Length: 346
Ligand code: TRP
Image 1 (spheres, rainbow, N blue to C red):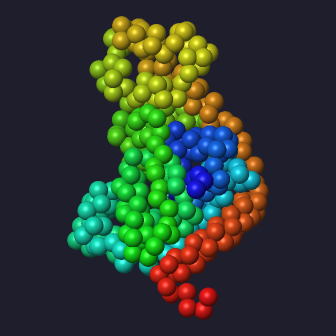
Image 2 (tube, helix red, strand yellow; image 1 turned 180 degrees about the vertical axis):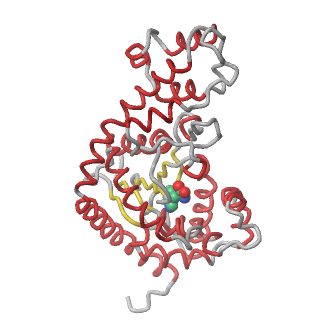
Image 3 (tube, rainbow, N blue to C red; image 1 turned 90 degrees about the vertical axis):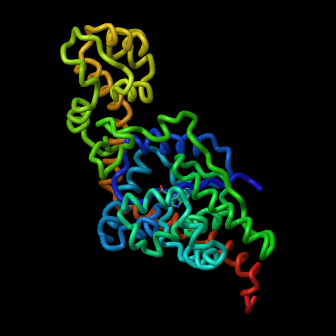
C-alpha cells in the first residue's frame, strides 16, 4: 500500500497564521517532497454545517476564502486534489453504513466532541448530525484509502475513531478499508499557536488572529497590540520573556538571520537577554516581529490578489478536484457495498 495523504479544514472563517504554521506550511512541504502516491485537501463544508446548519451563508462565504488561502500559500492543484466535501455524495453514503458500527455512547465519549459540545452550548440538545461527524470524518478518510493525515493534536481522537470503524468493518465484512495515522508537527507550539492576546488558542471567535489576508497596516496594528509583559512599563525595566507573546511568536516564526536583519542583535537569544536585563522596549521587539510576519505574508498576498482577480480559475480548480475525488470515492463505495453484500446488480 502506498502513501495517501488527506487533510481538511472547515470553512468557518478565513485562515490565519496559526493555520499556516500549524498545517499549511507542512502541506506545501509534503506536496513538494513528492513522497506520496496521492495527496488530497478537502474543504469540509458538510462538516462545518453540523454546527452551523442555521447559518449556511457563513459556510458559503468562507468556502472560497479558504480555497484562495490554500492556493495563495502555495498548495498546487497540479500536485494536490483540492475538493469540496459536499460535492462528493459518496461520503454521505459511506457515513450511513459506518454509523451502524459505532454506538452513541462511544461518540459521546470522544474527547474532541465532548469539548466542542460544551463550547457550543449543545449539552441539552446535541444535533445528531454533529454527534455523528466523527463517523463522517471516517468516511472522508477511508473513501480515499488515506493513511497519512496531517492534523493538529485535537484531531487525534477522530483518527482513533476512524481506525475503530476500519477495524470493525474489516472484521465483519472482510478486509476492505485502510487504517490511518496522524502526522503531527514536530513542535507543540506550532501545533496550536496561542492568540495575540495570550489566549491558549488563535481563533476567529476570540478575535485574536492575524489572517493570511490581512493587509500590512492591519498586521502592524495587531502586532502592536500584542500581549507582552504587563509589568514591563518603561524601556529600562527588566522584562519577562516567558508568557510574552511577541517572543513566543519570534520563537516560532523568526530565524536568526531575520533577527540580524531587523534588529541590532545577532540572535534571538541575545535579544531575549537584553529584554530581560532591561533597556529593550516593546515597540522595538514588535517591530522585528512585524517585519518577520510581513516576509511570510507578502508573497501570499500577491498570489491572493491574482486568484481574487481570477475567481473563475479558482472555481474551475475546485470543480475539477471535486470530480476527481468523486471518482475515487465511488470506487471505494463500490468496494464497501460489495463487502457488505448489497451490490445486487453487479
Ligand atoms: N475536523 C477537521 C477540522 O476541524 C476537518 C476535517 C474534516 C478533516 N474531515 C477531515 C481533517 C478528514 C482531516 C481528515 O479541522
